[in-house]
Image (cartoon, rainbow over all chains, first blue to last red):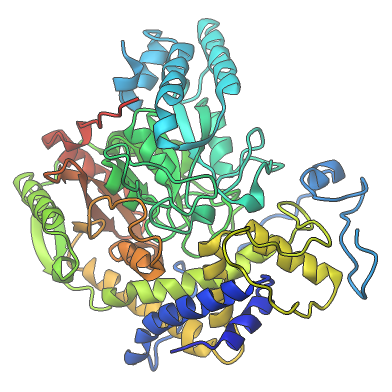
Length: 100
Length: 508
């Protein structure tokens, strides 16, 4: 199963990874090879087999709703690349300007 | 008394009895790290001052007759994938260089409560993705048995530091073999507990339905000691099991008479190194001599394990690693500078991608700069497999095969108590051998991924050495919550053999 360079560029945008031209060339080859390998699963008939997303027979797990302190603002911001003491600062969400 | 030569069990006893102080023990291991780690690179951070302070406090409390925890004074190294509030936590990634978490992982908190002395954070493949430790952003770990070879991965630093006597025990994590494979390649004992036996809270998430924390030690008895502290329910991890934690150390005495061990013919197929095959067969013979019986069992879907794993794990990783956005913590690209290629690597300009906004551009560039090649590859693979039009063909298909793989184990454990076999197809391979072939690297996990896909337990330990002096690993897999049996079987083997006592000669 071969991926095209365009496929890889599209996935890069979905994955929020800026890819250089060389990245695209290399990944197109590597991902095609890996996808080709994992496609061997097609040979197995899995009709009637339910998907297993999790090894435990999981059900909703509930705990008592007990109030307790959360992280302080200072703790939450301690590793932020940019902040103003109360908020995370990021570049403009809309439009072109206003990079933080 | 030479602390470096004592087992964890003996160290804890000696400190409690006052035969040796916690400070003496901490100094011995910290000095060993200072001497040996330049050649091995097992540690990303050494917690020297805090460890000595903690050890002095334990000695003072002991002298004052105050109560001490069950691991009082025992040095423990922790994989850098577990959050530590007082030490950096980087997952060996530029993305998290210098990051300090606001809280301790549950396992780290348990170790502190037990009065273990946390000596440092160990090197690993970036975000635990890899089988050789070469994907670390901070340089590879060197195998103490041959410094030109890989220690395995992803918990390569944890394995190497125990093998080279820089810590008596270490904590690792295992998503597809990342405890068992490096333990096997470095000649130590590593336990991957049943999914949910040990809380994952504060373990930086890679693939959440597969990740599990476990001990890496010189023996099963030492691993059992650590399990008594780290296993158990944590309300902070909804997938952690509520089953009572057994007294693992007191369950080692029963002989193996009547134990049924399965042998899977497919484990001995093409690709298995002949010296590894020989060592593994010798171990089966030793178990037989100890009273176990060996039976042929089939795991018909095991051959699909790697393909299934390399869909499921990247899919979960692509979701988990979406949190690294350059906004809340971790690396952020400088505005306006763009995604700069390293000079001299022949990157050519690409027409600027149409980013939706300055914010999205910051996301994309921060992630491009912060993540290394293998992490990007897996994020891309997972994103592709989950994307519209491909979800059913890849992710949903892999989940169906995952059920077949688990059912194989359930069927096999109807006939035998444990399944034995190789950990890895080869002994430790040279650094650089597989770095240009991602698929070749993935195949080193062929014997270990099934355990994680099925959510069961597995242990690996040394069962011989190659003519070239490299350790050969043996793996036992057992049903859910079979840790007491996995540890007991390994302990009985280690009472009959000496392989686990061998030490590499590290020239420092």
